[in-house]
Image (cartoon, rainbow, N blue to C red; front, side):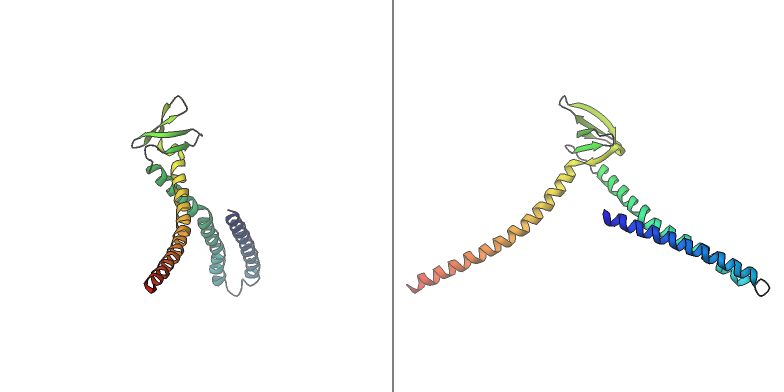
Length: 175
């Protein structure tokens, strides 16, 4: 998260500095154009337009990659989470209501909250977090990590056991 903030700050500073430099250059170019107005006037107009359009294009590109694209990704992930709700999932709404999904519909979900098992019908767009799905993902990651360690440990143990068995067989054959 800190890296994203640092990148955003650096890119904003770069965009501001480049815009200031272009403005200064275009002001200098206008002064030079006025001084040399008797020689030529057609070539400087094209360069002035480019010097104004280029920084705007760069700033828009930076804005797109820093702000718009990540937000679209978060929105897409949120929509996928809301569409993949299952009965029994524990969810949290935008207002902070925590409940368990009892029934899903096209655009609404019925949840059960509290000890008295109060039922609420809410819109899908109000759901901000699926706690059960997050827990499943954490468990899957943890099991993958532990399985890899256990699998390598099992392989090492199996190799040692096989070697010991072979030695025992050789000793029994010699006797």
